[in-house]
Image (cartoon, rainbow over all chains, first blue to last red; front, side, top):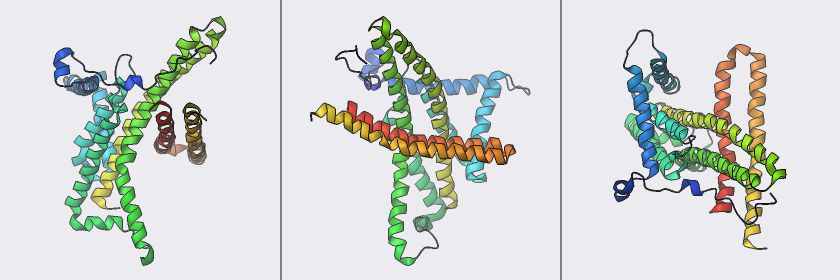
Length: 252
Length: 74
């Protein structure tokens, strides 16, 4: 990095929120993140609606995709939670596809990844956490608090372990939200950094064209990696929600 | 030492955590290879579990990376 001089990389500028949809959007603080949420929701609803319209016995391509979405999440719910999992299916399905489409629209140029904001992911994980606690209290009443007392331990250790269990229960909020946020943010910062390398090295002279091309190749590979991470993190979020719900319904 | 170089050194120190993550991801895939070698029929089920473990371990690396970014850019 010899020739870029004093210019530094503004890696976090891409996450700045601006208002969308002109003066009307500005008057109600409708940001581009909100716009992307609408786009993600509309894309999912559109896939389901258009895909399921033929209601064919032998599904076409779109209908097969829509059915596969349904079956994947349904089998995830039943495998992780058990037969009670069916009543949590709408929640898990919505969470999974909201996050999945939010992550995926971020890979397109000029689009915005709303899951790269901790405010969004923290709201989602708080929703999951409060719901899980509510379900556990409703199913088990006061007996729920025995969840924090592990069985078969010496009496002396009990206070310490209860504190640890409570902390690990509460830290679910942070781990669930920061995992998604960090994955999306780090991926996009890396794309930005290597993109800046291409511009800086490409303008620096003939000798630097090879490293510039190398950075471009790295960026292409990173886009593919981002697709993997986007799917994987949505899956991880949904499956952890299922695991927490399993704990809430069965208490260990 | 001025603030900028201290920040750069701090960001470098923050990503030492990646050593542990490297060990963890290596462990996961070593276990995946050996379990698939013992029972090739279980490949599909074990692979999903390995990918889940990989994603959870990789998240730890990204926590360190986020701290480094916060030191550098915020």
